[in-house]
Length: 122
Image 1 (cartoon, rainbow, N blue to C red):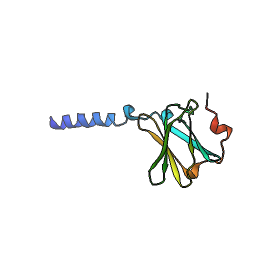
Image 2: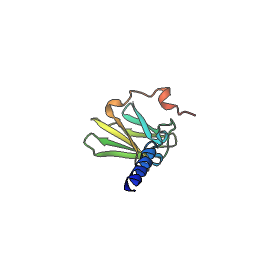
Image 3: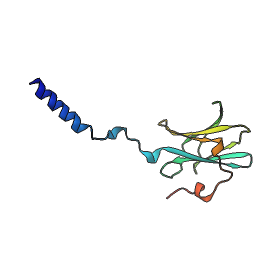
Image 4: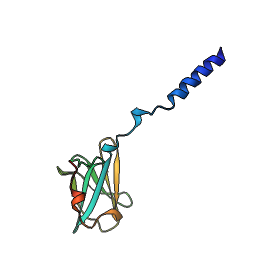
């Protein structure tokens, strides 16, 4: 009897192991992403999501490389945030209310925006 129960339980577990954990799969389209570029002495960052749309509500925070906050803003209606560009190394964290973030390192800052970086997808 015990052996039959064990085999039944093992068969049930084996059958369930192939199912994805749907409750835990992230929606990659809503993962925050960002791009930053230099505009003279200013740093301009576009905050949006992986689905290509800018998000006016995202938090954009500028840090020194050792983790000190320099400035923090919410992205404007076009999904943009602007800061005075720091003289030394820095990084930008773009985050949403769920705690998901995207990081832009100072070495990844483009010299100027291109039409592709400014145009949200329809």
